[in-house]
Amino acid sequence: MGPVEFLVLAFPGEQVGTDVVAPLNALRRAGGVRLIDSLLVTKAADGTVSASELTDQEELKAALDPDPDATPETSLMGEEDAAEAGELLEPGSCALLLLVEHVWAAEAVAAFREANGRVAASVRIPPEHVAEARQALVNTER
Image (cartoon, rainbow, N blue to C red; front, top):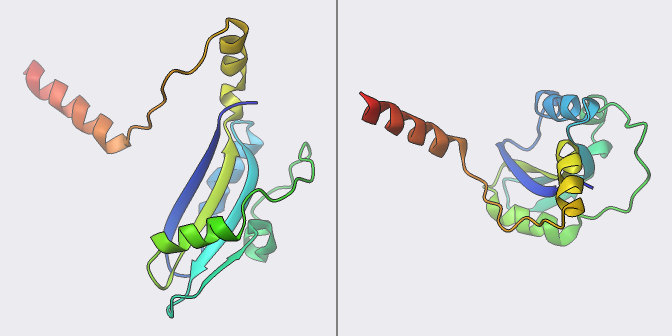
């Protein structure tokens, strides 16, 4: 199995559109990621937090092709995850909670394990920091 990541993607409004799910579906169909679990968390204008499975949303379900290799799995995310995500949201907004396996990295992980290697550290660097570092290098080369 490749690395697994938990993502909370927040959006204004109380619903996400198919344009948000389509890129995820494309990655899944191409074999880049496997969607292990998902939740749509909504924080209503009155502050009430609710959650539903992504596949329970008819308009979003239509944008996700069925995964022929998927096996029915118990939902790994639940009320506690929804409540924690709800704390991050402003009233009148929503979040898409995704638990994804980075399938693209599974072969590399297998090679690391075969060589008795381990990931000693892993840091996610925001793209804007990389852009700033590149710009700083360009400026110093002038």
